[in-house]
Length: 325
Ligand code: AQP
Image (cartoon, rainbow, N blue to C red; front, side, top):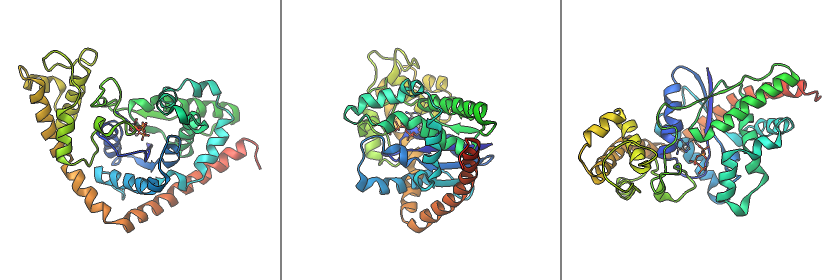
């Protein structure tokens, strides 16, 4: 299968991004043709600092490799290096009903979160994402649950285009992890963990041990006692149990059993130790990669060349089908 996915350079990659998306990328890389990118054009739709964006883009590439992507097996590139993404987005805009964009959950959430910056790009984000996916005729898109509505739009647009102009695109499917598709915020477990929320609400993949401990020990939990998985009545504890289960590779039932009769503090302390240990190799690899700027740039040049070849062919085909000269 051809697999494609990306992460925005909006902040630090956190445990939610890892468990929802990156972990899947890593397990898919051995058996599939994988293309992963840094979604820098998407990140311009929310407030950002132009002075630090370049650094953040490179940091994302480093994070991908530190988390376990093998640049010898996968293609890694920066979205804005391939101009075909925005060109195809424009063409797809002309077949995308406005109503489809206005009902998108992410648009509504971000419009609420960034009230003074509701720009056209924020509304159009899903069309650019459809373009990212369709440009490479990708079959599988490994993402967290918050992105499934956008992948669905990419399917709709592919179908619509094929019906109108003749078979061109593959209809992509999202690939969701069985568990961990929506890791919740540590400070408000009714909301998803998000890069653009306060840093207390997430754990970065490269967070230092002291800070991991502090954040987990002060994570919002629920009233009452008892370590039980119940996302409706006990969203805080259920979120911690999910993270525990995924990082320890033990079923939630088994974790519940291990903490039977214990208080919330015992689970938190044990989870903090587990997260610190799990992320230790990530921190090491990140430090190592941060010293290898030339290698990172080489990976991106190689990735760009490879992605460009595919993108050019698709765009040419699309333009011809749409009647452009
Ligand atoms: N909390 C989460 N649980 C599981 N998966 C998640 N993803 C994001 N948050 C969670 C998945 O991570 C990938 C990267 O997403 P993105 O950078 O494109 O932006 P996003 O989906 O909007 O994620 P964030 O972290 O919340 O970033 P901001 O704050 O910039 O919006 C996607 O596959 C996503 O599903």
